[in-house]
Length: 111
Length: 116
Image (cartoon, rainbow over all chains, first blue to last red; front, top):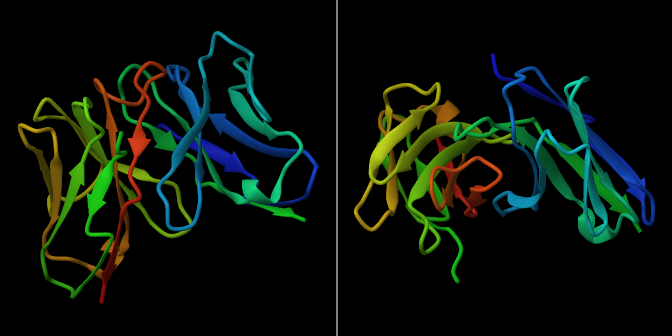
């Protein structure tokens, strides 16, 4: 069964700190790993994505780290800001299959 | 350019009724996918359409159906509504089939369906 397991369920980080969210997958055929950010009352918005031939991708304060052998990938948010407070979802897919999402992490960045 | 638009934004229905949700993709996008997001969970795949043909179906009962029109807009229909159908229904579009690095999914803000 295609599953993506996400942790932690919720996270509180102080302003300026580093937020780290982890995901693990089972299907080794997955070849696309995006992260989505969702604010209350809004749909998920694509934040950053990585392919398995790359171990790390950075876009501004957001970095994906990818460990193919461990079948794990993580999102790091550097210098976390109150405006980053949202729910974050990892996801995975292969080929043109549909996205399988994790259950989400509710991030709260305290001022 | 406008993003993915969904209507209505909110809907309240009674058990046993039928509901139709609508989605307009981003201009130039030919694929539409539907997802159900229950409160506190990640989105779950329902249907994917490309060029008006169904290209994928998730693990949902036959009460759920969808179609895509020649202008690439889409409808999701749910018959015989159950309390458990209460959720945020998300539509996503992409240029070709979505869900890949070169064809990411872009989501709308969803329709919040409440079944009483």
